[in-house]
Image (cartoon, rainbow, N blue to C red; front, side):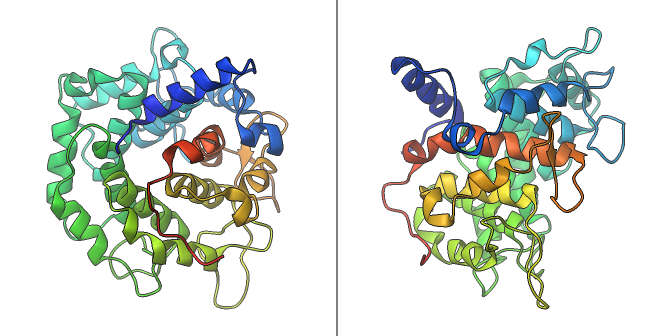
Length: 319
């Protein structure tokens, strides 16, 4: 049964209102993460063109802005109220589409995902372009597993609004490594981020029963503190980072996994939040991070969707 993220969020809000509580997720209650503060911090980074930089360069770019829009919308905020001068993030994204500057499959997927949630049916004529067809075309061209994370993200976004090309799924499955995970590209060592994203892509496209070995890989990469690094080193443990932990949490939620059985990584992730509302990528040297914040907001905002999103019969890892 396929449901849109928008419908799921609406259901959670309705259930929350029905029992008389404020709009608070399990992660916010248990882990004490302040999602509103995180979104407020994001707003301070908006550029005059309405967009966001990626945290490494100040100039706005499509991927960072689309991810910011998605995070803001998932948190229940109205993206159109985020203005710098007279420009919103949606204005910036439309301008980039009109200028023909959105070409990478990952950016196209990010854009479709963000617009679908924040704007809704406007994906078919966004900036004068049909983003749905644009995503289909991009996936049909990306058959070599050259950008696993980007291709998986595009599959996730497209599955909410249209059929996913079989070639796109075949490309992802072909790139799976013997350890059950996926790397950044076909033939590359597995990492937690790419693997988690492909798990979401498989579930979104109805392939629930193909995720068992991938979940087992994620289990093998989890640290004792409940978080995840991008990859464990052959020489020993690597510190958990908030970006990897957040991405895995979303995949576990889509898989119908109980986070308590995974050492409550949502509580671990909440510990990465800073006093200004931002999230730091690592705890060893805390510093406000755009990438960490836009990853953490969706993971902690959607944790309450676990029971709603659980597939009818999922394959699980051995705990």
